[in-house]
Image 1: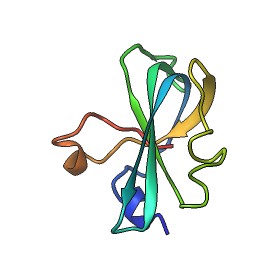
Image 2: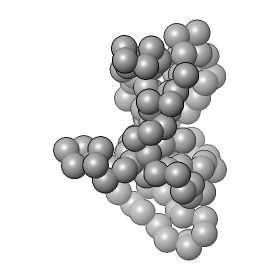
Image 3: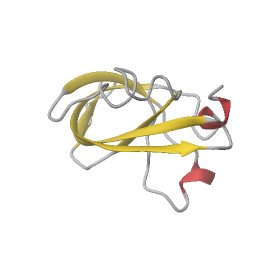
Image 4: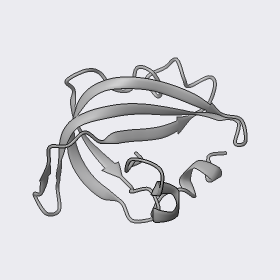
Length: 104
């Protein structure tokens, strides 16, 4: 169901500890028939290297219509929450006109 979404991202996952800033919403992907939820981080630490990023990052993940109002959608993250996540970077060809958007 989410193939179109995951095709935009690299295969390699990175584990991070992220500080969530806020949920910024979701947009409907009519081509794939799902929602793309998004939050902003205040920063993150990459677990494999210990590298700290103190810049704002956008995290996105896909959900169904039914999941959007649940703990998989709007309720998945909370302001100032610290969480350990596996993310993937957006592919270069998709990032040309976008800010880097890691995926969960």
